[in-house]
Amino acid sequence: MNFDLPEELVALKDAVVDFANRRLTDDAEVYERTGEFAYDLIREMGAMGLFGAPFPEELGGSEAGFLAVSVIAEEISRISPAYGYAMNMQCATCPYTIYNWGTQDQVERFVPGLIAGQSIGMFGLTEPGGGSDPAGAMRTTARREGDYYILNGSKMWITFSHATDVGVLFAKTDPNATPVHRGITAFIVEPKRFEGYTAKPINMPGLSKSLRSCEVFLDDFKVPVENRLGDEGKGFGIAMNALEYGRLTVSARLTGLAQAALDASIAYANERVVGGGPIARHQLIQERIADATVAIEAARLMSYRIGWTMDQARVSTRVASRAKYFATQAARLAGDVAREVFGGNALTEEYPVKRLQAYIDMLTVGEGSENVQRVLIGEDALGIKDATRHAMRNRFVQDRQR
Image (tube, rainbow, N blue to C red):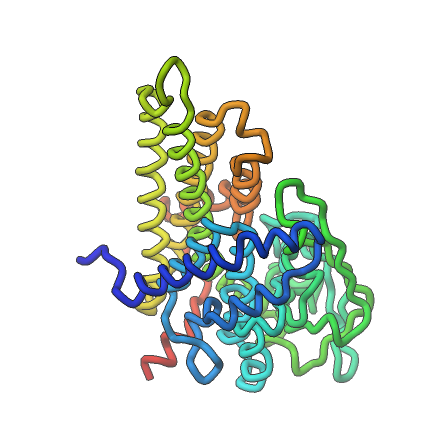
């Protein structure tokens, strides 16, 4: 068993770090000041191939695989946390869901532009009534009228929805279905083509003012019938499958944030002098740094394992849930350590602690909160519910094996 990354992924990691340091730091700050969406930086990420790892070359992908996705997402989030969002909207949860479940026409129409960064994506599942119960809380409806579905309702916490060209969105085509998840259908939406779509950015202190999450309102919003993704009533399974790929990127992003917090803590502990010497010499500081170091290394290996498991076309539900849960724990620990090491300076904008903590807090909820993961893992371990009960689809690997 070899725990080293393959040479090509080491080279990819170095290239991502170089790009992120050059283009996603000072240039990204310009967009933070203006609040404008960073279209050109997303396009540059697409041109670099950062979104195309799990896609075939004929669609503009690199075929680097899912382990590569984990490597990319971690490094992007370590250096520029806001741009980790793009690894979901432009890679894992939006275009990969279309690639995985769409018709060939849908795939050819929408996927190349998304992974190139030319089109902006989104994933619209959560609603104001409850993110941890997407089927039970869903009130958005889709009514078929001729060649269109008419959507009414609202979504919450939808990233990039203020700029999106193409998104995957879920609505109930049968609100009276029993059980409720059988009434949910997935759609490919095009907000810039049809009226009735409004996105209102949510004020989230500490997070990006450019790459926003929004509340989305649908008022007789049209979706062509040919944009339905899969069959009517099959949307919940598509959503659950999509969240597995989302947990790959989110666990990697949390690991990157944790590493950034640890790196900052180590640098500060070596610089901060109290009582005639650096605080790094104090045993309690060393203990906390040690705890975070070990947790982050374990989180990284679990994140890599999701990517490796997906690359082998194996069912990844269990490892994805466990990795997301543990990465949350590691990131929270690293954030707590940073606050302790920095003391009062953790509250200032001069240092990165408060900003990193805001992204850690946000990602502990994304793709299934900490307690949701506990329930999934616990019920599976106890034999109450099989974590692999939802069908897993991995078109990228399946197509390569043919």
